[in-house]
Image 1: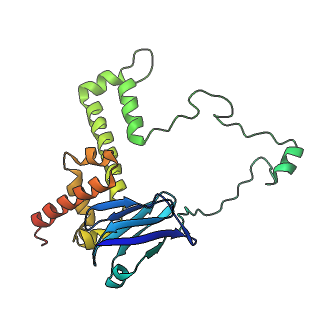
Image 2 (image 1 turned 90 degrees about the horizontal axis):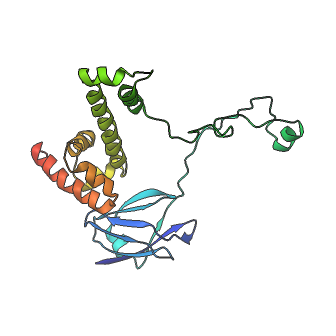
Image 3 (image 1 turned 135 degrees about the vertical axis):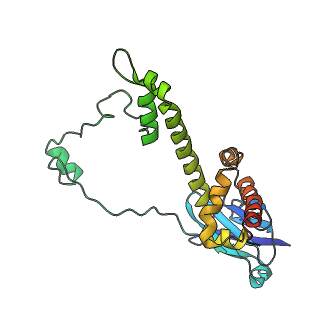
Length: 234
Protein backbone atom coordinates (compact mmCIF):
# COMPACT_ATOMS: atom_id res chain seq x y z
CA UNK A 1 0.00 0.00 0.00
CA UNK A 2 0.99 3.64 -0.40
CA UNK A 3 2.31 5.27 2.76
CA UNK A 4 1.91 9.05 3.01
CA UNK A 5 4.37 10.92 5.18
CA UNK A 6 6.06 14.20 5.89
CA UNK A 7 9.65 14.87 6.92
CA UNK A 8 10.07 17.78 9.31
CA UNK A 9 12.81 19.68 11.06
CA UNK A 10 11.93 22.05 13.89
CA UNK A 11 8.26 21.79 12.90
CA UNK A 12 8.72 22.71 9.23
CA UNK A 13 8.63 20.42 6.20
CA UNK A 14 11.99 19.62 4.57
CA UNK A 15 12.33 19.28 0.80
CA UNK A 16 14.69 16.97 -1.14
CA UNK A 17 15.09 14.34 1.57
CA UNK A 18 15.81 10.87 0.17
CA UNK A 19 13.34 8.26 1.40
CA UNK A 20 14.40 4.66 0.75
CA UNK A 21 12.34 1.56 1.44
CA UNK A 22 15.23 -0.83 2.01
CA UNK A 23 12.90 -3.82 2.21
CA UNK A 24 11.17 -3.19 -1.14
CA UNK A 25 14.09 -1.55 -3.00
CA UNK A 26 12.10 1.59 -3.72
CA UNK A 27 12.99 5.22 -3.22
CA UNK A 28 11.51 8.67 -3.52
CA UNK A 29 12.30 12.29 -2.58
CA UNK A 30 10.23 14.66 -0.46
CA UNK A 31 8.50 17.55 -2.27
CA UNK A 32 8.86 21.24 -1.45
CA UNK A 33 6.55 20.81 1.57
CA UNK A 34 8.44 17.78 2.90
CA UNK A 35 5.72 15.30 1.87
CA UNK A 36 6.33 11.91 0.28
CA UNK A 37 4.52 8.79 -0.89
CA UNK A 38 6.17 5.37 -0.94
CA UNK A 39 4.96 1.79 -1.32
CA UNK A 40 5.40 -0.02 1.99
CA UNK A 41 4.00 -2.59 4.37
CA UNK A 42 4.26 -3.39 8.07
CA UNK A 43 7.81 -4.45 8.97
CA UNK A 44 9.53 -2.58 6.14
CA UNK A 45 12.53 -0.40 6.98
CA UNK A 46 12.58 3.17 5.69
CA UNK A 47 15.80 5.19 5.60
CA UNK A 48 15.69 8.99 5.52
CA UNK A 49 18.80 10.92 4.51
CA UNK A 50 19.80 14.43 3.51
CA UNK A 51 23.12 16.24 3.51
CA UNK A 52 22.18 18.68 6.25
CA UNK A 53 20.29 16.22 8.48
CA UNK A 54 21.11 13.15 10.55
CA UNK A 55 20.14 9.86 8.91
CA UNK A 56 17.21 8.04 10.42
CA UNK A 57 15.96 4.47 9.91
CA UNK A 58 12.41 3.53 10.79
CA UNK A 59 10.82 0.06 11.01
CA UNK A 60 7.15 0.49 10.11
CA UNK A 61 4.62 -0.74 12.66
CA UNK A 62 0.93 -1.46 12.05
CA UNK A 63 0.03 1.80 13.81
CA UNK A 64 2.35 3.78 11.53
CA UNK A 65 0.80 2.20 8.44
CA UNK A 66 -2.69 3.19 9.66
CA UNK A 67 -1.68 6.84 10.19
CA UNK A 68 -3.12 9.20 7.52
CA UNK A 69 0.14 11.19 7.47
CA UNK A 70 3.27 9.78 9.10
CA UNK A 71 5.37 12.59 10.57
CA UNK A 72 9.11 11.91 10.56
CA UNK A 73 11.13 14.53 12.48
CA UNK A 74 14.84 14.69 11.61
CA UNK A 75 17.59 16.40 13.57
CA UNK A 76 20.14 18.75 12.03
CA UNK A 77 23.55 17.23 11.41
CA UNK A 78 26.08 18.94 13.67
CA UNK A 79 29.74 18.00 13.49
CA UNK A 80 30.60 18.97 17.05
CA UNK A 81 34.25 19.66 17.80
CA UNK A 82 35.92 20.45 21.10
CA UNK A 83 36.64 24.16 21.42
CA UNK A 84 40.31 25.04 21.11
CA UNK A 85 41.45 28.62 21.69
CA UNK A 86 44.77 29.56 20.10
CA UNK A 87 46.26 33.01 20.54
CA UNK A 88 49.65 33.08 18.86
CA UNK A 89 51.66 36.21 18.09
CA UNK A 90 50.35 37.96 21.24
CA UNK A 91 46.81 38.25 19.84
CA UNK A 92 44.00 39.01 22.26
CA UNK A 93 41.19 37.35 20.33
CA UNK A 94 39.48 40.74 19.75
CA UNK A 95 39.85 41.53 16.03
CA UNK A 96 39.39 45.30 16.38
CA UNK A 97 41.90 45.50 19.22
CA UNK A 98 44.47 43.35 17.40
CA UNK A 99 44.20 45.49 14.24
CA UNK A 100 44.56 48.65 16.31
CA UNK A 101 47.73 47.21 17.83
CA UNK A 102 49.15 46.66 14.36
CA UNK A 103 48.91 42.87 14.28
CA UNK A 104 50.03 41.48 10.92
CA UNK A 105 48.32 38.62 9.14
CA UNK A 106 49.89 35.24 9.78
CA UNK A 107 52.12 34.31 6.86
CA UNK A 108 51.16 30.95 5.38
CA UNK A 109 51.62 29.48 1.93
CA UNK A 110 48.28 30.76 0.63
CA UNK A 111 48.71 34.36 1.89
CA UNK A 112 52.26 34.56 0.51
CA UNK A 113 51.16 33.50 -2.96
CA UNK A 114 53.43 30.45 -3.06
CA UNK A 115 52.92 27.95 -5.89
CA UNK A 116 50.70 24.95 -5.15
CA UNK A 117 49.50 26.61 -1.93
CA UNK A 118 46.08 25.06 -2.30
CA UNK A 119 47.26 21.65 -3.50
CA UNK A 120 45.69 18.70 -1.67
CA UNK A 121 48.32 16.90 0.45
CA UNK A 122 49.21 13.41 -0.75
CA UNK A 123 48.45 10.39 1.39
CA UNK A 124 51.38 8.35 2.73
CA UNK A 125 50.93 5.75 -0.02
CA UNK A 126 50.78 8.46 -2.70
CA UNK A 127 53.96 10.14 -1.37
CA UNK A 128 55.89 6.87 -1.41
CA UNK A 129 54.75 6.08 -4.94
CA UNK A 130 55.65 9.60 -6.12
CA UNK A 131 59.14 9.30 -4.64
CA UNK A 132 59.66 5.86 -6.14
CA UNK A 133 58.46 7.01 -9.57
CA UNK A 134 60.28 10.36 -9.82
CA UNK A 135 63.42 10.16 -7.68
CA UNK A 136 65.61 13.27 -7.37
CA UNK A 137 68.87 14.81 -8.46
CA UNK A 138 70.19 15.41 -11.99
CA UNK A 139 69.89 11.71 -12.91
CA UNK A 140 67.00 10.21 -10.93
CA UNK A 141 68.10 6.68 -10.09
CA UNK A 142 65.11 5.83 -7.89
CA UNK A 143 62.71 5.09 -10.77
CA UNK A 144 65.27 2.81 -12.44
CA UNK A 145 66.20 0.90 -9.28
CA UNK A 146 62.62 0.67 -8.08
CA UNK A 147 61.48 -0.54 -11.49
CA UNK A 148 64.06 -3.32 -11.44
CA UNK A 149 63.31 -4.35 -7.85
CA UNK A 150 59.54 -4.24 -8.30
CA UNK A 151 59.06 -1.65 -5.53
CA UNK A 152 57.09 0.70 -7.80
CA UNK A 153 54.63 -2.06 -8.67
CA UNK A 154 54.33 -2.93 -4.98
CA UNK A 155 53.61 0.70 -4.03
CA UNK A 156 51.00 0.98 -6.78
CA UNK A 157 49.26 -2.03 -5.29
CA UNK A 158 49.43 -0.46 -1.80
CA UNK A 159 47.85 2.74 -3.13
CA UNK A 160 45.16 0.73 -4.92
CA UNK A 161 44.35 -1.16 -1.71
CA UNK A 162 44.17 2.09 0.28
CA UNK A 163 41.66 3.58 -2.15
CA UNK A 164 39.55 0.43 -2.20
CA UNK A 165 39.56 0.30 1.62
CA UNK A 166 38.31 3.91 1.73
CA UNK A 167 35.53 2.98 -0.69
CA UNK A 168 34.50 0.07 1.50
CA UNK A 169 34.47 2.24 4.64
CA UNK A 170 32.33 4.83 2.84
CA UNK A 171 29.65 2.25 2.06
CA UNK A 172 30.01 0.40 5.38
CA UNK A 173 29.07 3.45 7.45
CA UNK A 174 26.31 4.72 5.14
CA UNK A 175 23.81 2.79 7.25
CA UNK A 176 23.58 1.92 10.96
CA UNK A 177 24.42 -1.67 11.95
CA UNK A 178 20.76 -2.28 12.78
CA UNK A 179 19.90 -2.02 9.07
CA UNK A 180 22.43 -4.71 8.12
CA UNK A 181 21.18 -6.93 10.94
CA UNK A 182 17.45 -6.51 10.25
CA UNK A 183 17.37 -6.14 6.46
CA UNK A 184 20.36 -8.22 5.31
CA UNK A 185 20.05 -10.77 8.15
CA UNK A 186 23.73 -10.46 9.04
CA UNK A 187 25.05 -11.22 12.56
CA UNK A 188 26.54 -8.10 14.14
CA UNK A 189 29.98 -9.71 14.45
CA UNK A 190 30.02 -10.64 10.73
CA UNK A 191 29.27 -7.22 9.21
CA UNK A 192 32.92 -6.24 8.66
CA UNK A 193 33.69 -9.66 7.18
CA UNK A 194 30.69 -9.27 4.86
CA UNK A 195 32.09 -6.00 3.53
CA UNK A 196 35.42 -7.65 2.81
CA UNK A 197 33.40 -10.25 0.89
CA UNK A 198 31.84 -7.39 -1.11
CA UNK A 199 35.18 -5.62 -1.60
CA UNK A 200 36.80 -8.53 -3.44
CA UNK A 201 33.96 -8.61 -5.98
CA UNK A 202 35.34 -7.28 -9.33
CA UNK A 203 32.28 -5.06 -9.77
CA UNK A 204 32.39 -3.47 -6.31
CA UNK A 205 34.41 -0.34 -7.16
CA UNK A 206 32.40 0.44 -10.27
CA UNK A 207 29.17 0.05 -8.32
CA UNK A 208 30.29 2.41 -5.54
CA UNK A 209 31.51 4.96 -8.09
CA UNK A 210 28.01 5.25 -9.56
CA UNK A 211 26.91 7.02 -6.37
CA UNK A 212 23.45 5.50 -6.90
CA UNK A 213 22.26 4.63 -3.38
CA UNK A 214 19.49 2.30 -4.58
CA UNK A 215 21.75 0.33 -6.94
CA UNK A 216 24.39 0.03 -4.21
CA UNK A 217 21.76 -1.28 -1.78
CA UNK A 218 20.54 -3.83 -4.36
CA UNK A 219 24.16 -4.94 -4.78
CA UNK A 220 24.50 -5.38 -1.01
CA UNK A 221 21.29 -7.40 -0.91
CA UNK A 222 22.53 -9.77 -3.62
CA UNK A 223 25.89 -10.17 -1.92
CA UNK A 224 24.29 -10.75 1.49
CA UNK A 225 22.35 -13.72 0.12
CA UNK A 226 25.53 -15.19 -1.37
CA UNK A 227 27.45 -14.48 1.86
CA UNK A 228 24.82 -16.10 4.09
CA UNK A 229 24.71 -19.14 1.82
CA UNK A 230 28.51 -19.48 1.69
CA UNK A 231 28.76 -19.21 5.47
CA UNK A 232 25.68 -21.34 6.25
CA UNK A 233 23.95 -18.49 8.08
CA UNK A 234 20.43 -19.19 6.76
